Amino acid sequence: MRDNVERWIIHEGLKSEQVKNPENNFQILVKHAGRYGIPVDVFEPKGQPGILVIGAKVEMKNSQIARYLGFSAEEKERFESKVNDFCNSIQVINKMITEDGKQKVGVYVVMDDKENINQQTMLDAIDSVSEKYDKTSRFLLKTF
Image (tube, rainbow, N blue to C red):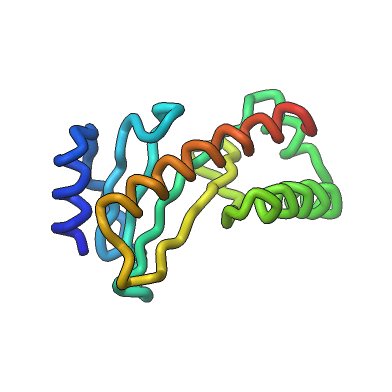
């Protein structure tokens, strides 16, 4: 799977780099992907060989992070539930992440139809993640 993904990325002329992550068989960061030119991770989870996950992390603004960190456990749960409901509505898997001191919302598309993982479906998934990244970013700006 790794060889195919690397070849497809190179064929499309996308700039990328390998990322070390013990949770994945491989992980590649595509630096400027999709319509919005965002960084996108492409990886195969260790526990799920043959599954390809495409994801991006929406970084919350400093003012949003400060507000979020001031929330009680109940308020955080309510906020995370709103984000989850929104992400479900745009058909994307999400995960709240704290990374490098920043609060982020990870948005992911899982490609689990092993028969149909190819260059075009991967590029379509990258475009889809880019679009869902933008929608999630706008949602956070409007509602938080």
